[in-house]
Image 1: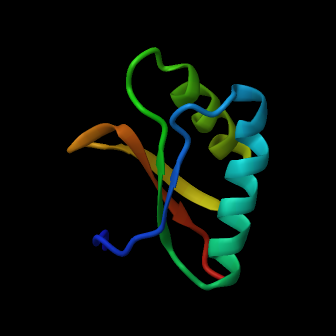
Image 2: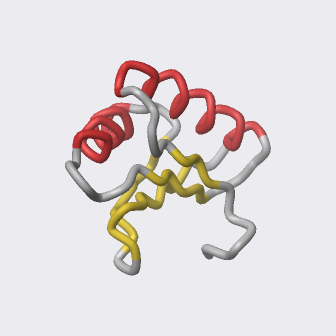
Length: 83
């Protein structure tokens, strides 16, 4: 369940080249802490970061599923696999 305490990674202003490293580290850290849901903020202007984030999540071994936040299309909710 998402709350104001759900961890989030804000990628606004980041270069696409750094996206993989930042997302990978964020997911690994939160998985190690036993969390099940995290948020990645990519913005909604040009979809460049959105597409890159979704490309990474699609093949990431720790991700069970992900979807855009219906209340904020500039965020993706990521569900991590069980340990």
